[in-house]
Length: 224
Ligand SMILES: Cc1ncc(C[n+]2csc(CCO)c2C)c(N)n1
Image (cartoon, rainbow, N blue to C red; front, top):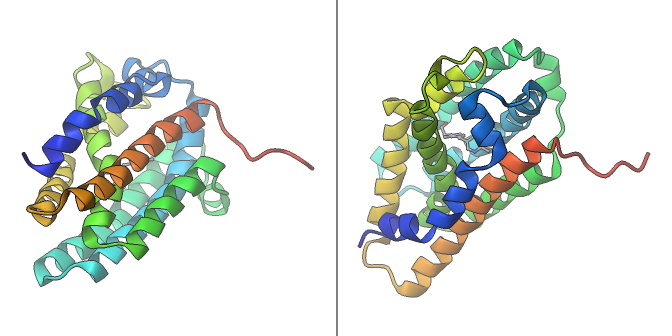
């Protein structure tokens, strides 16, 4: 069995929990409070900045030129395409460039991105992939599921988001990471696979916490 098949089976219950979170459901049926999405967009912008750094670390840890080039391409498209799309989309919600640039990460954003960066910086390329994969894989699954809901992809506010994450282009990217992780784990010892499973499990849990943080507009405790 491929390692990704083992992950897929094992993590179904958490994935169901992610997909049925009221934030995700609200994106699909169009009832999500715009204030919650606005909050999500700002935190997600901060998330993307650190996520892009994972691709840079991937290029450093890769052991062949082709994989290095792929990570370099992902870094370039995240920074120069995806983030500029994010800024344009944010405008629709009345979020200014200054607001994005001056935003502070909420506790969950900080914990999630720092966890991934810690694993990426200190581990192997397989460790890095296990930590970054739930982000891509779960968004692809969610995008495809929401795309099936009649009218969802044409929704005035959330349609573009659904179109982006259900696209084949995005799917190919997720599939490339899945295939690379399968290659790197082929023939590896059970002990090594369990460690990778733990990274994957933790960032899958963080995906849930990110939806939940956005739904509840999480802030740091106020003491001033
Ligand atoms: C919390 C959170 N999790 C996952 C994604 C999805 N995502 C972020 S970067 C990237 C790779 C392609 O550039 C993908 C799929 C997100 N936006 N926010």
